[in-house]
Amino acid sequence: MIYITRRERFSAAHRMFRQDWSDERNLEVFGKCSNPNWHGHNYILWVTVKGEQPENNSFVMNLNILKTIINEKVIEKLDHRNINLDVSFMKDKISSTENLAVAIWDELKPEIEKNGVLLHCVKIEETENNFIEYYG
Ligand code: NI
Image 1 (cartoon, rainbow, N blue to C red):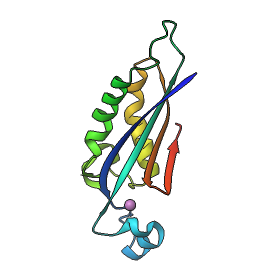
Image 2 (image 1 turned 30 degrees about the vertical axis):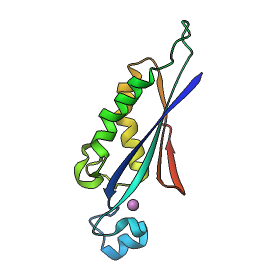
Image 3 (image 1 turned 45 degrees about the vertical axis):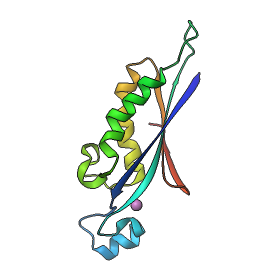
């Protein structure tokens, strides 16, 4: 099995909060990411696909196709947007990195797997000290 990873970046604003909680309770649970007037992160996204080496020894998956899928399905919808307000696949979800990874997985999986590979991992770095990985 061969694993291929494409790295992309996007910048986006968000606020983590529950509407049914006070600002104080949100601050207690979500910390600075619950600031009422939004804030941004420079996110890094890694998308890993896996597949067998094809018999003709060519690509497991053409990286140009992978790049195009990630850009159309994810980056164009997220980059320089507000995750809470602008991003259809994050509607009504708390804008945690965990929820973002699961939503990105769901966006990408059908398109990627039309190409004869399996989606293996979506990894997102929100700050250089924190990243999360989702394997489906
Ligand atoms: Ni934040």
